Length: 131
Image (cartoon, helix red, strand yellow):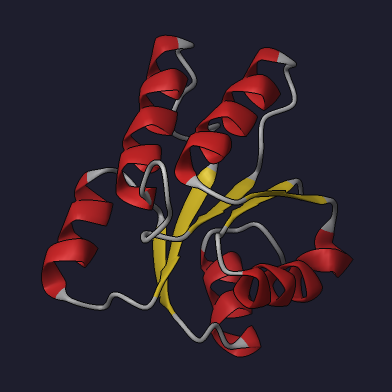
């Protein structure tokens, strides 16, 4: 499973890398703009990400906007939803507005921080990324 972790907080980024390391390579982005660029480069290389973990509150471009842009790039490239990256929002924001916005933007999951290993693995199983 190839993963992109978009997270500006170093502690959260390291935690996700540690939790996901046994499932395959992970790359990091420190803001939404970098996340969109990394996702686009992976698509163009024919090696898209299987999983993208997006924090909502990031500098330069927030996770909600990054989610919209990544989904736009997939649509432009005619990547079917069944082949699209699974995008999980990882955030401290658990208000209904942010949750609704994320799912309206076609995220696949939503995990509140602090991220717990059991919740993350449960989400990955539901998304059929791990057995």
